[in-house]
Length: 130
Image (cartoon, rainbow, N blue to C red):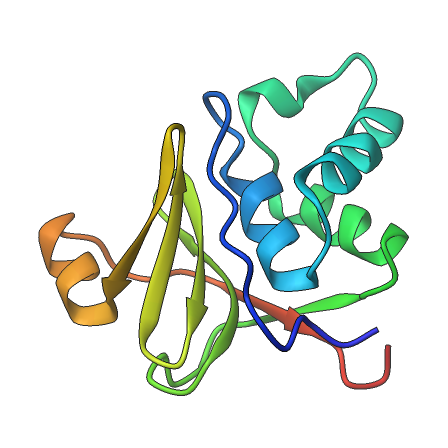
């Protein structure tokens, strides 16, 4: 299954749910669909502490979209789940959607990276063979 064509904004609901929100937006599924997969695969649910990349990949695969990790990419054209220090955001064509409890925020990429003084990490994107 390819990533969502249109991005529905998903706001965070509690601490450390950025992976759930970013996956929901990227895959075009509900927060609850992602949360259900996390809960089923992560007992006792350590997801409350956040998810590691391999856990995110496992959940996405279970939801029908295998992911691959990219270390080299162009964020002005990229579409995927981006890791930044201790956080995950959705990037799409030079924009960053940051799911925070209480509301998601939309940023220009350069403004986001500069405001938080961060460097982008691994980008998770849908596998073309998946």
